Length: 247
Image (cartoon, rainbow, N blue to C red; front, side, top):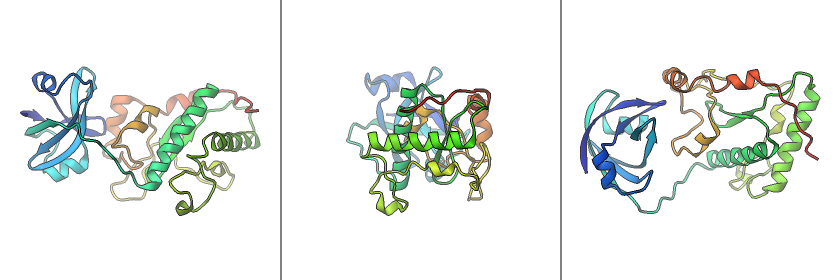
């Protein structure tokens, strides 16, 4: 099915809005899987519902491959794509997502507020606000105990080996980042890498986004994200919470 659309901004990326008639023809699924072709370039995605609109996202890579830009009026060819989808992430990135999914489960069980944050380079960090009367030794010991507890409960997801090649697809819950001689990239800081990626806080649900990558937002796109979603890190700075005992 072909339709005309304008490339519009959507979060840090862009999208096209799917007309109601086309959406109905794709079937009753809420987020139908589709194959999209623009200017001879085809990729697989899903229709997403956002703020009353039904959108197909277009990443920077797909815009480049299709030779389009935000604001362009284009022809879109979309078909239902119900073939099996086996997405292969790089081993280290897949391990990061597994690690943070496991951590989310732990924080929910403990009723602890925590905020994941992309590093802008390769990994994901989790920031936990804590009451001001806790010492460095208190927090470091608590994070180590939590990390090791998650590893014991989910050994299929967590490894304690330093070398990525030795982890066999598992991830290291690196509590050693809580050290006096360690430096951590601050929220919204640009990184010295092509495109100037930014260390961006995210929502837990965004870990399910197939286009998520540690360097997804850059100094050119982070402003639009802030305008649409606000400062996701602010609640971390404004909340004091007592870290519960784990035993």
